[in-house]
Image 1 (cartoon, rainbow, N blue to C red):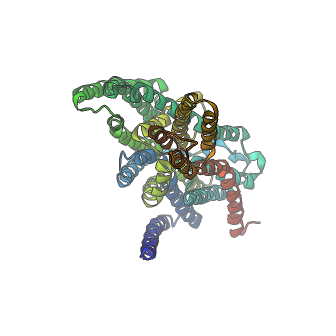
Image 2: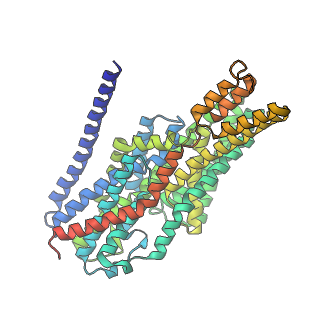
Image 3: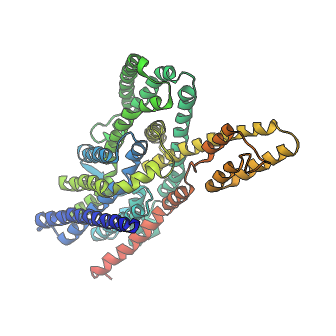
Amino acid sequence: MAKAKRLTREAEEHRRGLIRLGLAAFFLMGIWLYVSATGQNVPHAPLLVFAAVVGGYMALNIGANDVANNIGPAVGSQAMTLTVAIIIAAIFEGAGAIIAGGDVVSTIKGGIIDPSNLPDSQTFVWLMTAALLAGALWLNLATWMGAPVSTTHSIVGGVLGAGIAAGGFAIADWAVMAQIAASWVVSPVMGGVIAAGLLYFIKLAILHQSDRAQAATRIVPWIMGLMAWAFSTYIIVKGLKRLWESSFFEAASVGLAIAVVVVLLTWQYLKRSRSATRNDRGSVNDLFTWPLIFGAALLSFAHGANDVANAVGPLAAVNDAITSGGIATEAGIPFWIMLVGALGLALGLALYGPKLIKTVGSEITELDKTRAFCIALSAAITVIIASQLGLPVSSTHTALGAVFGVGFLREYLKVSYASQLHSIIAQHEGPERARLQAFLDDFRQASVEEMDEMIKSTKRKRNPEIVLKKKERKRLKSIYKEELVKRHQLFRIVAAWIITVPASGFMAALLFFTLRGMLGVS
């Protein structure tokens, strides 16, 4: 019976996989048909058609991999269901791309190569097409492995690798690449420290107070105000920068005005609901539900406005080079190209996003709404700080760093709490004290399964030499009943981050030579 159920589940998953693949293929076929029909009079039309399909494929993979960082914590904390999160993110990703994606995009991502070292525009077209396909293939592989990686670094690696293949090592700006490499450390560390600091403050100021309801009424309005300021400033600086060229001071001033309104409204709401607020952690957690939903929507909008360029930028560059016959540092984005990016982001998220959403939301560390709120707020604050300091940061690395930050803080606090158990030893003398010390030392090194068995062994009937009271056994069990930060996820994700640029670069170099060879160029 169990085997039959397992086979049924596998068959159903296989069927769903075929449906997802069919919808993705239908989307790419639609791009092929449209560009073929409208680009008949364009020179090198087949290459433009191929580049357009690859651009759509890249957009699908960005949606599948990158968007999980914006909504994963909210889903993992159960602030909203997976279905609702996907719908919200798909709408706001698409809206961000179309409304605020801009009319012009940089053709050389981050200025990492100098196109003047290329012999002609045809070489530039092959370069950008190879870079786009390599970035998409690497993202596809990373998504299949369940590793959230930076889409920006994927396309940067592709442009670098294809650029070196086309023009040699002198074509690259290695100072820019050094900054990007530094962001591998700066982004996650900054995000993790800010998220952990926010969570620790909330624990001390609210969750560890005897009257949590009163503490929440006093503190939460200011936290919501900080969130309102951070997200408003973030959206203006990053999400609306192509619609409104504002200085940081202007953006921060608008954000401050919005924050004041939010503080007053939150304070009034909590004051009115004071009598109905329970004095427990769950009640405090519930206060962050709607802020998490709004945060996920706003992060998705800003992501769509910014990261759609990773898909449409190289495609716009190819389109401009083919139609104008030259190489430009900036290229206009026709509406059809922006639509390819917007639809691809939304569809990729809907079809293949759930796997990475689950990884970010629940497979790294356990998240509640308070922790997820700190992660979302940390992502916005980190980008604001980094932008003003001129530091290159990855939104993916920042968000994942924040997840690990709150996880390691939980682990640290649990271990610190566990150290209080040594006070038990102080109450014993002689051989009994030595036995308890040895027991706790072994306990710290044991696996989760071994810990459970050791706790059971402290009952008097099973081990008369090591005896703990029932309350003490419960404390041990609650502290060590789970691995708070999944180390295998940490190692896999960090490894994927490190090899993203070289992996996509190596693939892009091979694809560049392949494209050139297929076109009969010696």
